[in-house]
Amino acid sequence: MTPEQFLELARVLPEPLLLVTNEGQILATNQPVTDILKLRRQELQGKMLFDLVTESSDDIKKYLEACSTSRAMILGSLNLRTNDGQTLIFRTQGAVIQPWSPESSALILLRLENRNIASNNFVLLNQKIDELAKEVQKRKQAELELQKANEELEIRVQERTTTLQETLNELQLTQTQLIQAEKMSSLGQMVAGIAHEVNNPVSFIYGNLHHAHKYTQDLLKLVEIYQQICPNPPLEIKTQIEEIDLDFLIQDITQLFQSMTVGTQRIQEIVKSLRNFSRLDEAELKQVDIHEGIDSTLMILDHRLQAKHECPEIKVIKKYGQLPNVTCYPGQLNQVFMNILANAIDALEKSALTGRWSAVNSQTTDNPQIQITTELIDKTSIAVTIGDNGLGIDEQVRSKLFDPFFTTKAVGKGTGLGLSISYQIIVEKHGGQLNCFSTPGKGAEFVIKIPVNF
Image 1: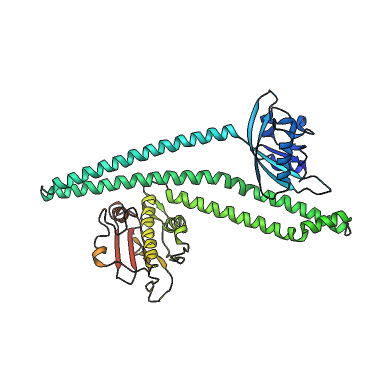
Image 2 (image 1 turned 135 degrees about the vertical axis):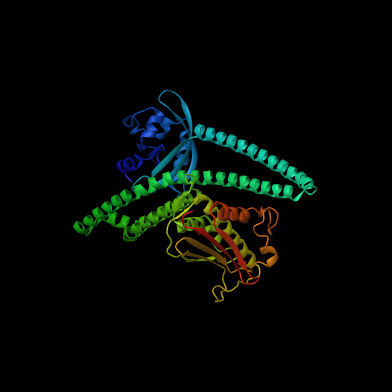
């Protein structure tokens, strides 16, 4: 890479970057470096790195030698003197761009990071963590006090009439709604924030991949023209072509750009799914694509569907029908899909301990599966069926599935609120139905029915 090519690439980057030789000569810098040193780029050209730092020349030479002889990025530290006499401490990351050879010096790219700013950010992060820990402690204390109050209230309710018992039940349901709503609100804000922060750098990378690929193709075209005009280059050029394996490089670089493009597109799809799942701006009724909500939920749970040492990969079979947009509360409906799918995964992981799974659609299978079916019913309502081929649920447990705080999971694994909240969302919020059908040894099936226009 020449200094001119380095400046062309570094011009769009906000980080301070230096291009130096292994002898310490400064070949090029970008604007952030000149701003830090309070110098013009012309004043830096021809200078040695030793002229700008307080470290000894021996230390600098050792660091540059380490950078020029390693394929990995080398971490270091530099104390830079600015033009106004200040000394700034920087953390460095050095990487060789052109390895050293007898014919030419190594080209080393140094990335600078202001240690004071990084330290301040670290202190600020610790402060935020401390504040969050205190808030979590307060919430735990509040939950303990609330739990104690509930226990005392239940003792008194047992001595009262059936009317007071019904009032208490209603109070408990309202309480669970508030707790779950707070949790989902916090989760939604966090997910939306992460999606926003990830989307900005990914969009920048994706936007520049096209230009980088075009510039690369232009350079390769230039090489091809040179090869045609000069089929017998000098020995030095032939040697360099053999060292870099030019034919393989030309073939592989296009595949690299394709892989990077696919990767950034995948990240953008994940960000879109995160935003769709949180739906913080859609707390009111809205017409949405139900399939989009299901797919977003599956994206969130994708890591749990992958194979683990104790459980094979969980296969998801989608049998989507032709559905119109449905008027609903999108965020709450996504919460229902999340609860039911997460429970199905838990059931299949539990079944993995026995290594047995039940039949799906009258066909035996040796692998865990979740089947999602959607269909339009009489043009006025839709049905979403989520079934698994786990070991199923016995009648005693199935009759209590939608009761608040009822759970068969170990302490710390479940709160008993997921299906209770899901039932309220479907029945009370959307005027629909939520049912579970299961026979021990034959899997479980949850059927959601909601009107198209609520």
